[in-house]
Structures are given as C-alpha cells and as structure tokens.
Length: 356
Ligand SMILES: Nc1ncnc2c1ncn2[C@@H]1O[C@H](COP(=O)(O)OP(=O)(O)OP(=O)(O)O)[C@@H](O)[C@H]1O
Ligand SMILES: [Mg+2]
Image 1 (spheres, protein in one colour):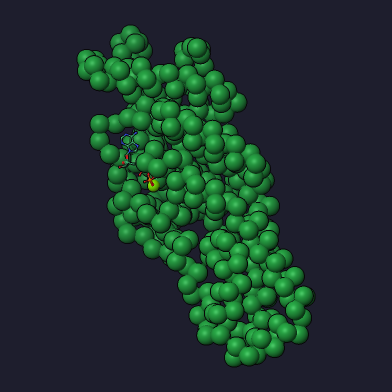
Image 2 (cartoon, helix red, strand yellow; image 1 turned 180 degrees about the vertical axis):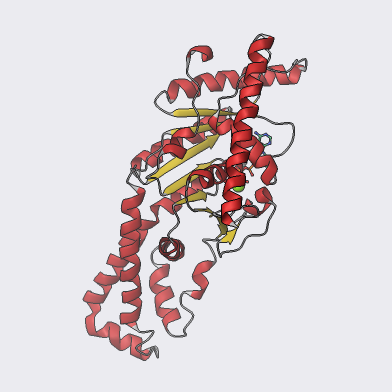
C-alpha cells in the first residue's frame, strides 16, 4: 500500500500555469463535483487570463445553481467579474433550427437519420464554431456525466463519416439526387448544394477543432472523482477512452475526501475514512504520473461565488491536516493562508478598479 505521507501532494496550479491551454474539459461520473470544480477552475483562470468562458454541455445545466445566476446559450458576464463569461448549451435541441425550411427537412432528415448522432454532432459543431469566433483566452467545459461526454468527443469522426456517406450517395446517384431535390421543392438556397456546402463548412471547423483537441498544448481533460469504487472504475474507463481519442489528461481531482483533522468520533465517519483511504491508495498507485488534487468534503454545499472562491484555495494549496502538527506550525500555516487570501483580494480589487 502506498504511504500517503511520502507522496508530494498535487495541485491544479499546473493548469493555471499552462498559458497555451485553450480548451479545458472537466468530466466524471454524475454528482462527483464536475460543476463545482469547473466553476472554480474558471474563476481561478479568470485571475491569470484576459478572458474566460465556461460552457455547460450538460442538459441538466447546473452552472446557474453553482453561480446562483441565470445563464442562457449566449455568453453572459458572471456577476462580480469583468472577464469571466458563462453559457449553457443543450446539445440535444439546438439542431431543431437546422432544417427549418420545408423540403430540405424531409430529405436531409432522412439522410441525417441514417447516421446516428449526426444531428447532435452538427449542433456541437455549430456551438464550437460560434465559440471559436469569440476569441476567449481559454474555454472551460462543464461536461455531462461520462457517457455523454465521450459521445461528444466522438462527434468529429461521426461528422466526418456522415459527410463522406452523403458524398458517396451524391456521386452514386448523381443527377437523380438533384432531380430529387427539385422534386421536393427545394430552391437553390436550401437545395442540395447549400446543404453540402454547409456540411463541408462544418467539416472544416470540426477538423480544425479536432486537431486542437488532440494537441496537449491546447487541450486537457480534468477528471473529477470521489474515493469510491464506482468512481475509480469510471475514471479508469474515462482515462482509457481519452487515451484512445488522443486527448491529453494528466489531472485527477479527488473530491469529497474526509480528512482526519477534526476529532472524528463518529463511527460512520471513521468507517468511511477507512474506505476512502483504500481507494485513495489505489488512485495514487494507478495514476502515479498524474497530478492528483484532493478536495475536502465540506459540511455544506459549495454554491454561490463566495463559497466557490473560498473553496478554490484547495485547488492551489494542498489540504493539510490540522490536528497532526504542533501549534506553531498550525498558526504559521494559518497566517500564510490568510496572507495568500489577502494578496488575492488585493489583486482582485486592482482588477475591478482597472475594469471600471
Ligand atoms: N467537497 C464538497 N463538499 C461538500 N459539498 C460538495 C463538495 N463538492 C461538491 N459539493 C456539492 O455536491 C453537489 C454536487 O456537486 P456538482 O453539482 O458540482 O456535481 P456534478 O458532478 O456537476 O453533478 P452532475 O453530474 O449532476 O452534473 C452540489 O450541491 C455541490 O455544491
Ligand atoms: Mg454538473
């Protein structure tokens, strides 16, 4: 068993320091803390980057809950910031405006229907296209639980396959294809060429983004989990899939860790701590080449900007048990923590003043 004491504690500082990063995905099993962690990461990035956008691609959108502010599919400035924007997109409904013209609908839907996932892929591509033009310094994705996220990352290849399928249909049926479009009452604007043009354009963006997603200088995937069996299992699956898609991942956040710093009398807590330790050891063993950041389980939820900011200190300073050290050490640590908070508050004040 790995001895916790000997392993240097990791932090998320590496993500804040990597200035070249453009896309940061945050994913993991349902309810482990993806929204909390992506929100905090976006807040921390906003301190070191000119502009940050956080996007939720989870149909259950909970950025609004985390920040306690309503967001829509249009990037909106987060209260109290001048460079942090948030938006919530729903990959499952966007495509409805895709084939709004009659005639095109039937044929296009017919074709699209033959390629599973292509409509979702198209709306994801539309969203990425939009985001690309907006020129944010870094974009953080709060993704939906694992299965959905992995599907999202497969979209580029789905779209590519779909396009080549349609192209081959076109060449096979040649004139018949255009006769059909006329028959279906499509004018030039919505006809076959327009449709193919649109798909072609989409393919370019998808290829470009796909290349960026596979570039570890530009993209990384942060896995969030909790120290439990199912989460460990899911993390391994996620890491393997990401490797398959050639998407960089080297950070694991283990959330909801129960630390031994209070007088833990409760049998239940003690038992859970023991259980957690078993899985923590396994995480450290399996992912010895990852940055592992542990976050404490709080007695209360982490909602609202103030709570998120307060919790953010654990992203940059490893959690240290308070009971195992002597009083001098404990106070020194407290003073340095407070100093850091003061520095951060001062830096932020400066930024807010400059923004006015
Ligand atoms: N370390 C923690 N201590 C206490 N509460 C936490 C902690 N981390 C997250 N929470 C709370 O747990 C709940 C779930 O967290 P969060 O919404 O971030 O998870 P999620 O992975 O995004 O969930 P979903 O899969 O539903 O999107 C929230 O109410 C959040 O405030
Ligand atoms: Mg969430």
